Length: 243
Image (cartoon, rainbow, N blue to C red):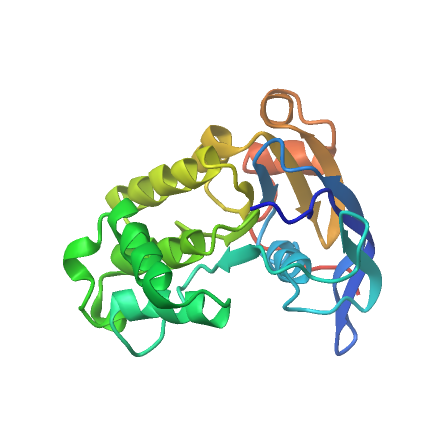
C-alpha cells in the first residue's frame, strides 16, 4: 500500500453521452483522511462520477489526477451495486483478480483465503459465485477488492439491493477495510448509512456539485437549497441532468 496516490483531484470534469450531460464542471480534491460519500437523487450523476474517478469512463473534458499524475494507479478497486462475478467458485474469483494484478503462487492462495475469512465466506470457498445469495455475492466482491489491498476503494450503492441483515454485514466489512488504511469513496441512497459512514459529503444535483461539507454539518445545516430539499424529502429522488 505504499504507492503514492493521494490526493485524488478532479478538475472541471464534464461527461456527455449522445448530447446528454451526465456531470458538468465538477471539481474537488480528496485526501482520503475521511470516508467520502457522494449523495444525490437518481440521475444526479453519482455513478458516472465514480466511474470517471475509477477510470472506467473517460471524461468529455476535464481531468483526474492522482498525487499530481495523470496515470491511473493500480492500487485502487471498485465494488458495484450488482457484483460482477466470474463463472467460477468464490475462492477462484479472488485468485483470478490477484493473478491479473501480478500476485502469484502461495501468496495468491493465502491472500484469497484470508479475504474470504474476513467476510465470513470461508465455508463457501468452492461454491460457484453466481449461486450465492445477494448478500454473499456482495461480501465476495468486497473480499476480492480488499485482497488487492487498495489505497482507495470505490463503492457504488453497495447496499441498495440488500436486506437489512446483509446491509449491516456490508457496512461492517467496509468499516474494517477503512480501519485497515484504505480510503473510501462511496455513493448511496441510504441516508442512515451515509450518516454512519461519511466523514464528508459531496452532494450532486443535476450533474453539478452544489455542496461539499463535513458530514455532520451537511446533515444538520445544509447550505444549498437543493441539499436542504433533498434531506427534507422535498426533492424528487430522480432528476434530469443538465442538457
